[in-house]
Length: 95
Image 1 (cartoon, rainbow, N blue to C red):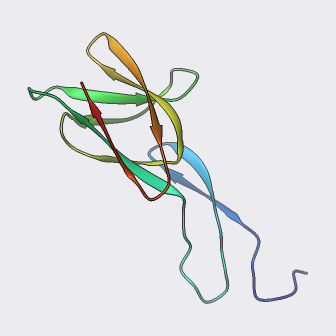
Image 2: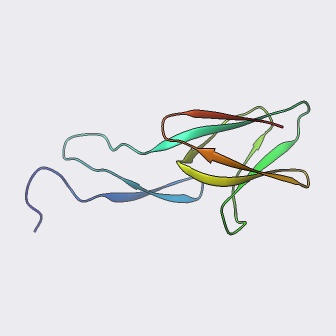
Image 3: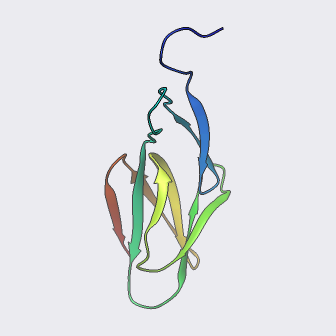
């Protein structure tokens, strides 16, 4: 049995990415996520990939996507660039 007012950490998914969340009795859980936006002309979509190349999310250009803090690859058409998302911050990748 777990004693005290703090429950063990849990796992949540945000755009197909598992992340640890802190769970405290009587409080809302908090996650360590940030936001990524690819800025460029046009109305294409961009894809966010993990280290193994698995697509985690897809959004229209100039639209933000929420992701757990971490390092990702971003694909627009046939071009791929690295991106780092930091907790609590919005990152803009100018294409």
